[in-house]
Amino acid sequence: ASSTSLVSDITKSIARSYGMLLEDEGVALRGLFIIDPDGIVQHMAVNDLSFGQNPEEVLRTLQAIQYVASHPDELCPAGWTPGDRAIPDSVVGASEYFAEMASSSEPTPL
Image 1: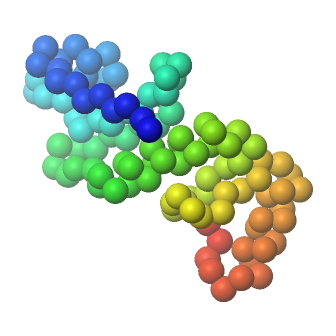
Image 2 (image 1 turned 90 degrees about the vertical axis):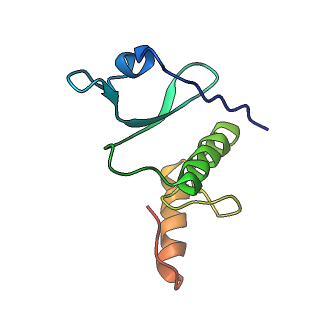
């Protein structure tokens, strides 16, 4: 299980600290930061004010980050979802993964 924090930034100090504040307009861009328990930003997405972010993609990204944290010898390809095969984090393992993907009828995620 994960703990998720949502914060309010009425003073805009967080937006300013992360470079998300449009100072002249006094508004913050739509920024999303996934920060691990060690305080390291693992993912950052910034959108213009005119469009938002897809919550399903945010959840998928969080799940991929959690997966590789608990499986340090594997990498999640683009589009990975829980239950999908991950890429072994070695030259031989990755070569085998891509060879198998190339011989299958499915598109190869990178």
